[in-house]
Amino acid sequence: MKKLKNILLIYVGINILFILVGSNLFAQEKISKPSMNLQEFIEKALENNHDLRSKKNEIQLKEKDLDIAKGERLGKLSLNMSYKDYDDKVAIGNTITNDYVKDNEKYSGVIGMEIPIYKGGNLKMKQKSALEALKSQKLNFSWEEDKLIYDIAKTYYQILELEKLIKTNNEHLDELIEQKRIVNEYILVGKAINIEGIKEDVEILTTQQEIELIKSKLISSYLLIYHLAGISSESTITVTEIDEKKFKDYNLKKILSEALINRKDYLSLKKMKSEMQYMTKASKGHMKPEVDFIANYNIEGDGVLETYDNWNIGVQFKYYLFQGGTALSKVKQAYINEDIVDEKIEELKSRINLEINEAYFDMKAALVNIKKAEKNINYAQENLRIEKIKYKAEKNRIIDVIDAQNLLLEVKTDYYKAIYQYKTSEVKMKKASGDIGYILRGIQYEKK
Image 1 (tube, helix red, strand yellow):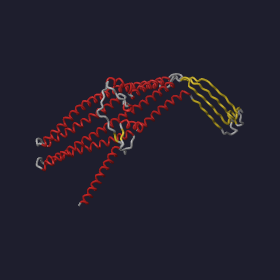
Image 2: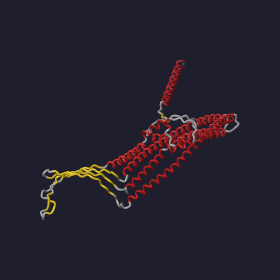
Image 3: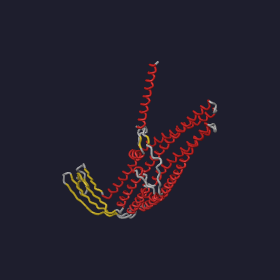
Image 4: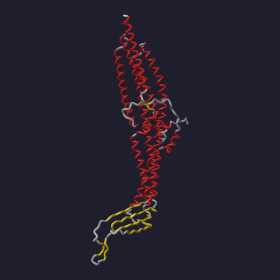
């Protein structure tokens, strides 16, 4: 008997050891699970996002447009060579009167040069226009980066919110399961009826379904942030916790005044307006005279290897008396393009103002909801404690306890939703004001 007891003790000890080792391994595995903070996700996205990469090629296209515009101002150098294999009897002229010469040219070569001196200013204006277009495209690319940063941040906060909601619902589920245990004990001793246990079962099932629904949304959100960051969808990288109670005060008037200085798409439109103005001047240049410097050197050789050469140099003047109305139409078209950009600028200014105000007041509303939810949580926790005491004293029904549990779940849910409404509204406001890069810079804003 004593021997059996020792064997059982050894067996229990081994099992406890395995449990402890297994728990430690699980803890280590949980700790070592890869995670990234918001800045790291953004840096990854700016480096790997495929859509952003493709937009870089648009900058290269504008760079080539600028190279073309510069090249047109430099002029052209040409080389033209030919070789003839002919019949010696072929002649050029009138053979009847014997007034002819033999076509005995064997080869010829021409080197020509043409340099524009004056083209009505359109070549210079085209180059300036191409330069403004390049600057506009670079600003557009920066704006695409800002939008990507916002999408990453919004998804990141959504993930954190969903994880908090899962945690809150799991705590609620644990409360329900514990209460279910108490109800079952009461049913056995006749202090409760079966319908109370059924009500608990319904609440437990409802909560489990809600948890699964939130988990499904969480998976989708992770897939989205992986996609935006250019990370494999098979990744297991998680998001890092943030300081949820870190709030800042912002000066709306200051933000609005700085928005038109920082907002990349607005600055891009301003550059586009400048581009259109130069294009208008270039179109007007086609209605003016043209002056080119021209030089040619010609060398020819015949069948007996005699060579002849000549050259010419001069200035060519050209002026179109009539162009079928095309030049004037291009000028009018250029003015229309200017008007289109002007309207876009005014529309964007109005939209920037609207976006900033909406995000700012959403953020303010979220702060109010956070404070309200904090007070409600304290009330709901105390209310649940009292309802449990009353239930044990048989002074209320199980439905009262369940209502108190649901109220606590509801106010906790409101709290986390308000927290991440604030965070999302903050980055939305920063994006609208053109300063969302603060996430990467890590600037700490002081209260104004």
